[in-house]
Image 1 (spheres, helix red, strand yellow):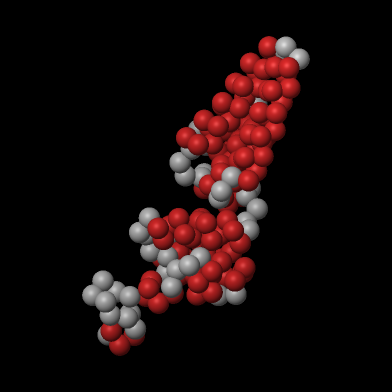
Image 2 (image 1 turned 90 degrees about the vertical axis):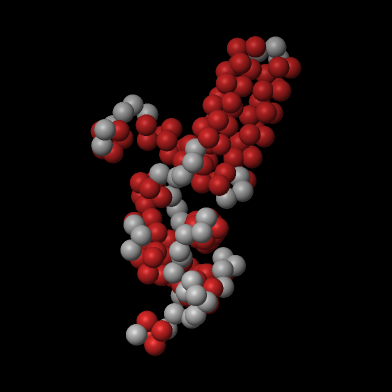
Length: 161
């Protein structure tokens, strides 16, 4: 099913946007996710005090579904990262660190030619930090480390020729 047909399914937009936003938040440390969890726990306790068993059951199920949906989700959907998420410095650094820590290249060439999401990370990194090297440094990645070849030589024009 293509994206446009999928988006037209009932209530897809609101529910998926909500879950995706929570997934981004959870992937970055979870302040919003934690606050929602706390609010729901308070609501559950209040409903228990008032002996509102149906409400308690409903809230517990809702909380369980949110926790499972957020924690079981692997990669963030490309469409969401490209069109719906509000990019921040923190999200840009998080996505960059995640790629670097998984052993994938983060030099500007690999980011430029690696797909739409990687290009977005590169663009936002340059915009937020002024240059790709400054973005790498902000992420705790020494720029010179990503320019070293497998043999330990710095990649320069002379080495390539």
